[in-house]
Amino acid sequence: MEHVRDSTKNLRLLSELLLTPPQAEQTGAHSGAMEAYSIRTRQHIRGLAPRDIEDLKALAATNHVIMRAFGPLQQLLEADGNNAAELALGAVQDEAARIHHALEFLERICISLEDAGCPVTVIKSLDHWPDLGSDLDLYTDADANKVVEVMRARFSATLADRSWGDRLANKWNFVVPGLPELVEVHAGRLGQTGEQTAVTRSLSSRTRMVHVRGHLFRVPAPEDRIIISTLQRMYRHFYIRLCDIVDNSLLLDARLVDFTHLQSVGQAAGLWEGIATYLTIISEYVEAYRGHGIPLNSLVNGSAKFGTGQVRFQRDFLRISILPHSLNLYVSELMSLLLRGELRNSIRLSLLPGLATAAALEQKITGSDKGIW
Image (cartoon, rainbow, N blue to C red; front, side):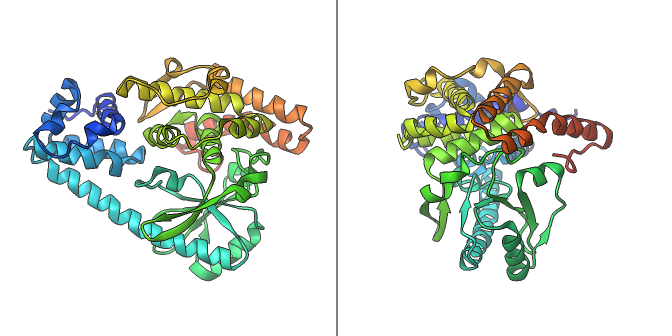
């Protein structure tokens, strides 16, 4: 009988493993560990076969949560006497090795660029810690030509083909020998068409240094992390990964976010409604699994346009409808830029519908939109 992958069932399992209250997760790999989870989840875990672990691993990988989900999963499988525990442990070990290798390169790249007068901030990639993204994303205020020069000279890097979207966004992707992940550098701009400079004006000045497994990196302030994540999810890809839910819920649970500053920057960038909606979706999703949402300011609650009721799980991600929801957020961003007199940024953003249409046609004709998007 042909094996059928049940992504929805796997999504529920991963979500419960990731969002179960900490006190339940801390019960460890003993008989009580299973009792921390719902009957449905316990039954699912007891019935897992090796091929099911592979399906779970594929979904966890695309959502950047292997380290955070497969650690508890391995413990639960072991507590239940399921031999598939070895496969779960193997997945964690393989991912840990990939991450270790990537971090070694990432630190060397950051140091080399800093030494050459190109200060860089690691954006997005380290938000998922102890997981890591599939690309290594950097932001810099330095001249992009200098960055290219350093990457070529120090790492023999080659430039990946740049799409129309990459050129508008002022973004470069580097292929570095010995590093499986692409290194993606955003220079001076953020947003799908590079329309966001309101966000970048203070990004570099508000960064902080963090230690990650013996490596030192510059990362954005909590508020900028949320803004960058919102840009990627609500204004570019129109889908949310499980890692985004976990990353931002942990940030907000720790009460590290200055909502007044977040709103101020969000409104200046024309993104505040998108930010509020994004955080509301995350809070409602978390509430469905742990019984309560994340602590949100009244500023957020009063500005959100919709919640999880308008989000559907499809093709491995939680997807947001482009019509009307994403379109409304796009119009709001564009109008905000126009009202603030940011003509060049407005023109950039006005190109987005045409770019999206061309990408959709390219996808339909060739099966890939890489040359466009």
